[in-house]
Image (tube, rainbow, N blue to C red; front, side, top):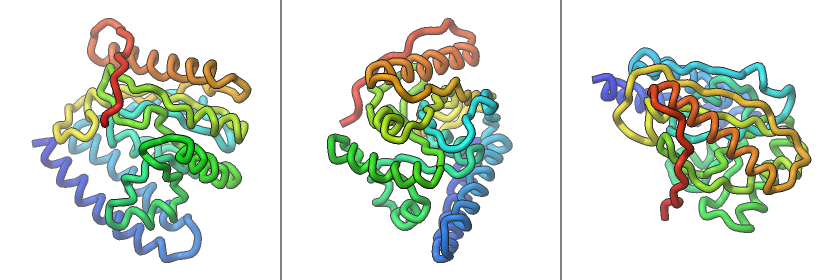
Length: 249
């Protein structure tokens, strides 16, 4: 019953705020539409808590740097984005071009200043990522990226892509890793939701200046290690290393 009620609330809120954001997109600047998106994500967190029964506990907010920075987060479910947008101001985000195929979203993504890249990756996608991210960095915005590029099941990981390293190198911004166990309660795009308390934790920022290999190794160790600890704390099972899986397709 909770899952069905949440699904109804999810689509009702999503359609309403998508139409509101589309209307506000006609106004000058990004602020009016960004306000609607922020309100939408906070309403979704409310629905997660009081309808689906998923309470989100935030840790490590005091670790967020001042000014512009990059957020490199574990991606367990659609709920991850709601948590980030509801709690981090002036946020830009990296997303695959598949979202532009959804009606209304193409214009909204562009207006929001989303960094849209080719989901297939490669040198062209890296150049597009660098160019779009440069505009966001120049505006002093925070940039959200999911380094794996995929929704992972709890306990699994995908190969970490190097785009986040090049953004850090090019713009000299600190990278804040984010661990989570939200997938235990809302897994990927699943209809079923499991009540409980999920944890999203902001970890110690990684400063610029590391080599590509050193940076990616440190980022993956931080995100995967702490994510597995959070999963173990919630399930009461021993901490185990995450399992590397092949990317779909």
